[in-house]
Amino acid sequence: MKLFIVRHGDPDYSIDSLTEKGWKEAAYLADRLAAVPAAAYYCSPQGRAKDTARATLEKLGRTAQECLWLREFKGALARPDREGEITLCWDWLPQDWTGEPRFFQHDRWMEPEVVAASNVPQEYRWVTENLDQLLERHGYRREGLCYRAVSGNNDTIVFFCHFGVEAVLLSHLLNISPFQLWHGLVALPTSVTTVITEERREGLAYFRVNGFGDISHLYAHGEPPAFAGRFRECWANEDERI
Image (spheres, rainbow, N blue to C red):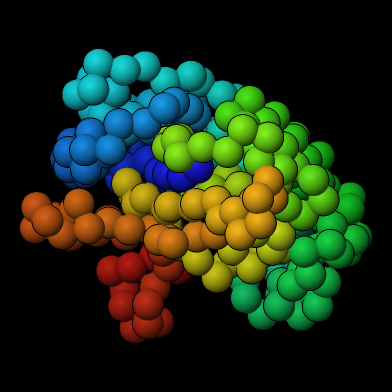
C-alpha cells in the first residue's frame, strides 16, 4: 500500500480557503496526482484542504470522503515563555521543548505535565485510532508497532489535510514522537509525502517514508514554493515572519 499525504495549498486563513497562488498550486498538483489514480481519497472538512482537493477530484471525476479527524490538529499547550497563553503544540520555541528529554521519546512524550494536563493526548489518540480503523478497512491491521497485512495490496490512498495532523499521522506510522516532526520538519503547501508499506516477512508490514514534502510539481511549472509554515531563515530577514 502507498499513502500520499498532501498538505493544502497556500492558505488564506481569513476565509479558510486558498490564495491566488494556492489555487495555481492546486492545479499543478492535480496534474501530478491525476497520473496516479488512487483507490480512495480522504479529505479534511476544512475549506483550504477541500479546495486543494477539488482540482484533482474534478480532473479524475472522483469524490473524496470527508474525515473530521483529518482537520488541522487541535492539540494546544501552555507556552512556557508566554504566561497564560495557550498555543498549538508546534508553536513552541526550540529552546523550550528541546529541554525536556521525554519529548524525544515515542513512548514518553505524553508524560510531561504540560502535555498530560492538555487536550493533546486525547486529540492524538482520536486521530491515530481513526487512522488505524481506516487502514484496517484497506487491509492493514495494527499489531503493536507494526501492521498485519490481512489483505496486502498495492493500492494508493490519498489524504488531503494539514501539516499539524500530517505530523501526527507520521508519528503513529513510524513510532516517532510528534514533537520531533512538528518542530523538525515542514511540509510546504501542496507538498506530497509518500509512505509505503514494506512486507519483508509475509503478513507483517511496516510503513516507510520514501519521499517527504515533495513539491516537484511546482518546480515543473516554474512556481516557487510558498513560505506558509516556515519562520525566518535568518533573523535579519525582516520580510519573513518571526
